Every structure is written in structure tokens, then in C-alpha cells.
Image (cartoon, rainbow, N blue to C red; front, side, top):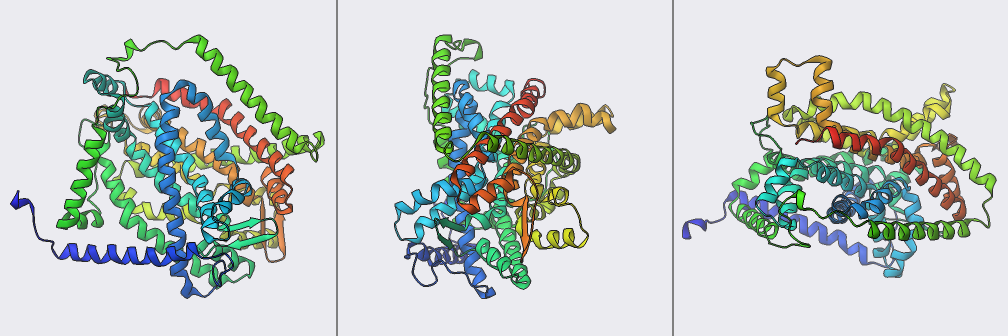
Length: 568
């Protein structure tokens, strides 16, 4: 036992200094969240570049707070949807709806609630901003774990049942490790998605009052309002440095750690450990802390907890009760009818049937844009994602670049897009469309990389030994292998594109404003006017389009992949 206690080394000292510095910075920044809203500098933005380090710290803390909430949501909501057939009837359609509701729609209904928790304090605005960022992060993570839990290989499930693992043990020792590679990549995508919408989330409006929380998003919004190109450049540089920092310190070690959970029986291609992971292993104190955390996690996952009767195998599963199904379905129909009645009652005073028809036509325009963009994005990023996923070294090199491009706010591209469209007299209906997919196409890339990285090495060796190549390899080997991951990425990308339409179909720079006909422009216009009835109408129609699109296309494809392309 005495040999196990070693004195801290030089690496421990460096790690200790870094941790203390981070805690001091966190404490300094957190002080601003408890100040009164009307205090000097509490909600004011200065374009002085010297303020960017503090702004970057506050934005990053908001994003990681939202990420923590997203992880809790993922392991509860996503797991419930995958584990319970009856719960999935409600939770999966709700997830389709929630991912399509624009962030401005969430802010409209939630700001007053959070501000009432901390009246007159900045903390209320902070919670509203964190919740808005949460709505841009949580959905794809929940879809990721839902997809993984639905595609756990049957032989592993049978093995867990043979060892008589409880539901709790099976979840933490089999299902979560199997889902980990995809979840890590989707977590990175969630951080990037938060950056994409951070401009909207840090600007809080209630009635005639508007506040801008100190952060990079508010800094970008202020720079765009004042047409300060230099300030925009400083904001891009600060964003790049922050993304590189948390990529090196957090996500690279996580990706390397998650690689050990790949499902394969032969050694696959691997990359060397990142420098941060090697640094942690060289420290003695940090290694001891890491071992203690790991031992605690193993103990926690091994608790013999069971939330129902333990089954010896799938064949012993009790068939579902049709009576309970009928009662459950009737309750759902009644609740849905009540919700529709309330929404119609709220909007009926100022919304006509003509408005409904017009909004449906605008939704059709946006639907065409989303469908075309999904096809183009898939043709581009699926081959690139497969190539990177099968080559861990190159995937690690491309990782920070992909994160930065995914995080790049579309607002920063408004000036060149607007100036180009005006200068060349281009059609805004067509040339504003690419702005919708700039932040959402990466869901496809990140999920395909995760799928290719998790593709079993023994299957790659079999295909290589049988000299399967070219289109035959794509059609019979890799596309079936990544298909569930691709569908997960496509579902979240299409939902995110609907969400992004609210900022992409309306672009302005100075006094020049361009607008494309579509549902996003309609919701943005209604939000600017404070017309809540038309905001509700736009969000309801957008949700209906997304649910129908998912039910008629993505869900059947997902079920097909689950039936035919799941490893047995």
C-alpha cells in the first residue's frame, strides 16, 4: 500500500497551477451573474478587443452549463424513448417537434419564467441564455443515444442476459459503452451548434426591454449593428482560440478514450494518444484522482439495481397488454386534442384561415430548400466522413477544423452574402438558401465519422480479404455499417435546417435587407413585431412539417436500417 503513495511530480505542479487558474477565472466571471440588471456594465457591450477574454469565458461557461443539462436530458429522455415502447410513442415525436422549434420561439416563452426566478438580477437572463443554448445542443445528443440503444448487437444483449445483469448493470456496462463513440462526436457537434446560435441566445428581449449579456455572441451582434469589420475579425479570432482550447483540453482526450469502446474482435486502426491525455497520465496526483473517479464509476454501474422483474432472456418477455395500449392511446389523443384546442383558442382572435393557408405555402418553400440541401450535403459529406472515420489520425487532424466550421455563426456571413447578391443582382430566394445548411450539414459529417470510426475492424478485414472494392464496397459494406448513424445525422440536420431558416431567410447588412419567401422569414418577422399569435402559428406549422417529413421519410429509413443493418 505504501508503494502506491507517491509524491506529486513536476507535471502535477503544472496541472495544479492550471486548475487553480481556471477556478479563479471561473469565480471572477461568475461574480457578474449575481449583479443587478441595471448595474453599470452588467448588460453593456464594448467593442474594445481587450474585453474579449472575459466575454469568451462567460460564453464558454454558458455553453458548458447547457452541455451538462443536455447530458442529463440525453441519459433520461433518450434512454426512456429507447427503452419504453409506449413512452417512445410520445417522446420521439416530441423530440421531432422540439428540434424544429426556433430558438427565438423558446426565448419568447421562457425568458419571463427565468427572470421571475431571480427578479432584477443578471442570473435570470443567464438562465434564459443557457436554456436557449441547451435547445441547440440537446436534441442530436438524445437522438444519438436513442439510435445506439436501438442498435446494440443481439449477441451482446444475449450475453448480458446470460450473466443475469440487472437493467441498471446492463445499461452502464453494455449500452452506454456501446453508445459512447457516437455520443462523444455528437457532444462535439452540440458545442458547435451552441456557437452557431449564441448570437441569438445572448440577446434577451422582454416587451420593450432588450439586454445583451456580455459574451462573444453579443459582441458579434454589436459589431454587425455598427458595421465594424475589425471587431468581427477579433470575434472570429477569439472564437477560434476558444474552440482550439477546449478541443485540445477536453474533446481530443474524450475521442481517444471513447475509441476503446469500439465493437470489434480484431485490432483496428488507432492514433497515438493526444498530448493532454499523456500529460494527465504522467501526473501522479491527477492519475490517482482519475483512478478514483474510474473506480467510483465502475462501482456505480455495477450496483445490482433493478426497476422491474429480471428476465433471463428476451424469449421470456411478457407480451404488452392490448388493454393498456388502448387506454394509453386514448389518453394521448385526448391530451393532443386539448393542446390543439388551446393553441387554436390562443391564435383564433387574430389568425384567419387565409393566414393558415399562406403559412402552409411558405412552409412548402422552406421544405423544398431543406430537401435540396439534405441531398447536396449528403453527397458531399458522407464520403468525406467515411474517409476520416476509417483513418483516426486524419480524423483527429480534421477535428478542430470541423468544429470551427460547424461553430461559425451564419450572421458573420451575412455581409459577404448580401453584398454579393446585391452586386451581381442574384435571386435571394436561391442564394440565401446555403445559409440554412452552413451550421447543420455538420450533423451529417460528425455522425458519419462516428459511424465509420465504430465500424468493426474484423468486417473491414473480411471485405479486404475478399477483395471487395469500389461501388460494391460502398453498397454492401460501409453504407449498411454507417446507415443508422447517417439517419441520425440526417434527422438532426434537417430539423436544424428548419430551425436555421429563421436567421437564414432574412439577411441584412447596414440598411440593406434581403428576404426569401419561407416559414423562417415569416416567424422572424412576427417575432420582430411581437405578434405572438402569428409566432405560434408559424412554429406550429413548422413543427407539423418536420414531424410529417420525419414520419414519411426518415423514420421508415431508420426502421429499415434497424431491421437490416444492425449487427447480430
